[in-house]
Length: 382
Ligand SMILES: Cc1cc2nc3c(=O)[nH]c(=O)nc-3n(C[C@H](O)[C@H](O)[C@H](O)COP(=O)(O)OP(=O)(O)OC[C@H]3O[C@@H](n4cnc5c(N)ncnc54)[C@H](O)[C@@H]3O)c2cc1C
Image 1 (cartoon, helix red, strand yellow):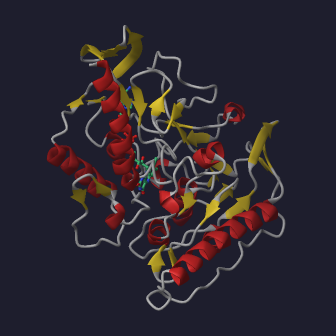
Image 2 (tube, protein in one colour):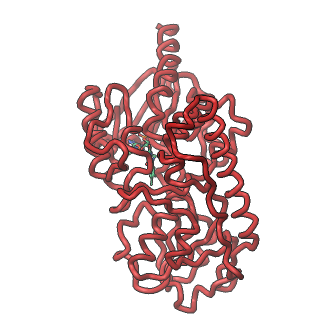
Image 3 (cartoon, rainbow, N blue to C red):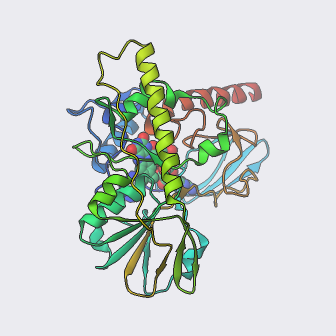
């Protein structure tokens, strides 16, 4: 196992200080390792996640070589040749587990933002004090965007939040964590070959969730109540002005509708399982409040906005992979983790085999199936 940094590198070095997992601790399970701390319904801090993964490296006895940066993988004979910062390696099969979130996905028009406005991505953002005083434009209203918008607004810097397509979820429903419902009702277990539009499912933004000791719901209504100003999707920069799409109201209705459909699924499942007496009564949430007249443009040179935080998602980085298996959008071509080149496999990508594939609790089942395939591949060649 080659790791360019340390064990749990992304959790140590690529996350902001206040971040906690949005998945409850009982859900953090790896093969042979469960959370055994005092608060299974809580949400781990980055220090706790790092310790958890370190513990897994020890109990699994994984042969990890840290500080081994893979700079090239190419096909050689019937296997692969790897160049790493620690030397050359020949092998018959490779599993690419380099993560789905190596680079921030920033739109090209970021280059047209005036130099007077500081720009930051979540991979470099640590805490609000890093930002200049004054207004901050947070772009993207999925898990990262809503969490950073709330924290920056609470630091006294007025936040404008540019909202695109998003997935609204309450933190708890009928007294249980919403992710308990997803897990129990089998939503997260849905397999990739049962998903209607797999390409879309793989590109779905993360849900608007935050892990706090208070189990707070952090949806757009909560942000509006804190004083965050909502604007539409950022579409372009023209003459130093940010232009936002209209249609916030429609976008909100769609997200509300999808949330209600999901809650309907939970209710139907609870009834079918005879669980209605064990959980709280069904309920619905207030629709997302749209601003009276959302601004459609913002003068980036006026000094109102001093910094922009791009919470517009992440991309994998395969710059080191010299095998032609990456599509025009920068994604690996694979079928359930079996990459389009003999002996090449991948793990840890969105909806790789199940809806929960890219979460900590998703790796165990995926890894078992992918490694089964790999073992058969090697056995035949042997
Ligand atoms: C902001 C954020 C919040 C998240 N919150 C949650 C959550 O609450 N719950 C949850 O279950 N999941 C969460 N996730 C998803 C999380 O990333 C995955 O659950 C998990 O970290 C994926 O593990 P991984 O090992 O596949 O990828 P990573 O953790 O990204 O690990 C990949 C490793 O590969 C190394 N690497 C990359 N390229 C090379 C190379 N060329 N050579 C050598 N080494 C290399 C990297 O240094 C890194 O250590 C979150 C993700 C992000 C970005």
